[in-house]
Length: 79
Image 1 (cartoon, rainbow, N blue to C red):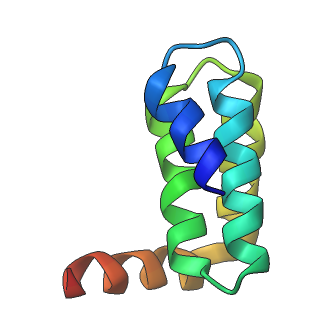
Image 2 (cartoon, rainbow, N blue to C red; image 1 turned 120 degrees about the vertical axis):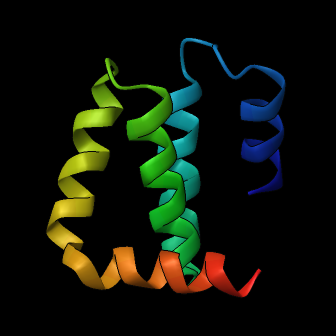
Image 3 (spheres, rainbow, N blue to C red; image 1 turned 180 degrees about the vertical axis):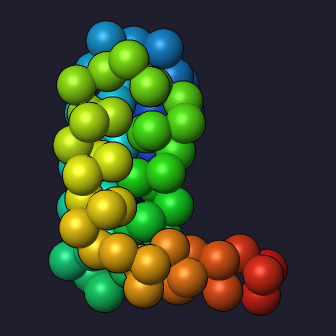
């Protein structure tokens, strides 16, 4: 997970940055960090709107429904 975060931080406009973020989101979800996973999906849609992963991220956000979005809001409001 740290390696993916490092790659996207060092190369935010790299050709595979959106793919790395998608993998990061998947790992976070597997670790039970749903709110963080949703935040990364939202980041993909916001920062890479023309990418192939933006479509996948938007679909996952829609699939998870408002529950995932609310979890992300709760997490960010606690910070």
